[in-house]
Amino acid sequence: MTTKTQRKSKTNPFLLSQQVKSILQNSGLSKVFNYQDYTHFKNSAKNAFNKPLAIAQMFIDDNNEQSDFNEYIF
Image (cartoon, rainbow, N blue to C red; front, side, top):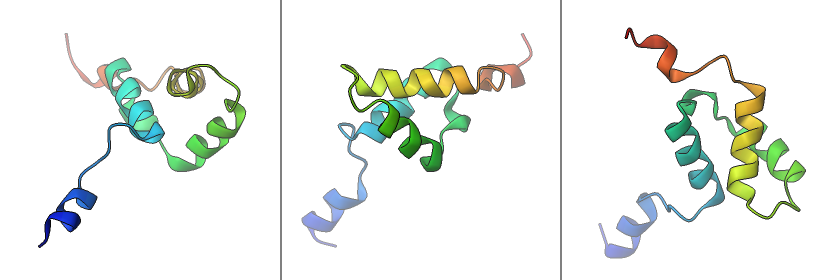
């Protein structure tokens, strides 16, 4: 495996989708991310100043009852 193929296999933290995923993971909603909703929310937030945060907020507003933290017993 060459160096070029090794770099392609890694995730890029600067991609918009990866930024949205990390925001959702920090909010406890990592399982609600899907690319169909992502493309819809991406088109809706095309004029937003902070696109990753605006898209993540749309996911949070749409799926606020499905938190990852609900599975844990405190």
